[in-house]
Image 1: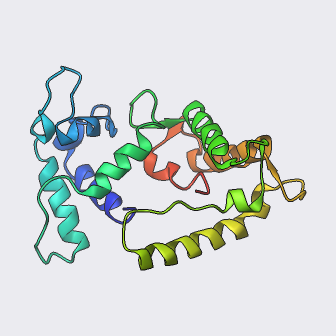
Image 2: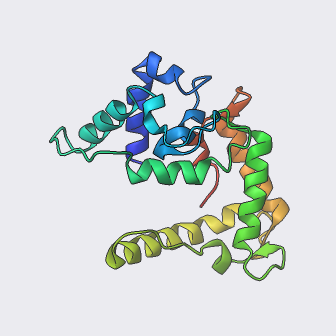
Length: 199
């Protein structure tokens, strides 16, 4: 998924007319895909409201596949997964992630990871990885690799070295990562936000 989305964004950025369809140059127009009910209330409008989007996705897929053709029709599953994952973060649907939106989502992720509800994350909770759609072998390898990556990252978030990450420690580290990605901008794009949280 992470490999394909930058290619789609590159296709969109190379087409200013298409990018303007998303409003303010952001990704908020992605909510109209899949025939979802749009702001006008028309169901089934789908990608017809965004001319050229299917071509941009097809070009990105072709680029990823080495221009071998065989591009599947419709909206790729990766784009659907992206929208499901990042639209809840982008509360105001402007295609950008503000500091408040990042903090809100980070708090929710902390609560979600805190399996026993004791307001701290231990290594086991921090390194827990969810299974994704796909083959069992691919998932087993991904789970092993991702879990190990998070175990190694744990000390970065455990500021006081007590083998537990409090909510404040977690949010402080996320804030630092967010500010580093943001630089002097008021907010960041969803692609940059992917690297702010450890999971």
